[in-house]
Length: 152
Image (tube, rainbow, N blue to C red; front, side, top):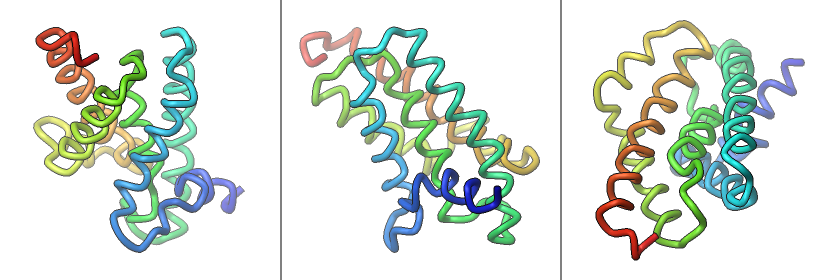
């Protein structure tokens, strides 16, 4: 089970890339979105819920495996946050690029209260701050889409 948890937490090993593993994890989330963007809202939400629940468990196990609270190779949180940012956003290149960049900035900056969520225990803390960044990203993406609908 430990190997499975680490495999999932690292998004199939993507988290081991030597430079910017969080960005690589976000790219996995964006790719997963591209593969599922035509799904219904219910389908996309179900995928997000599954990734998030599995992510809490896998992140918790991986943190113990690596002996750190939020190990760098654990990127399933970026996968979930990126999915949340892009959920039902459509498939235009502008949407994908803007959503990707928004999430990365918000994940790094961690505006309040996202940064506080890291204090939650174990895998929940690993996942919660990125999911909150995903909420912010989704809201900003919706606002931009309403101001410039032709881009989307």
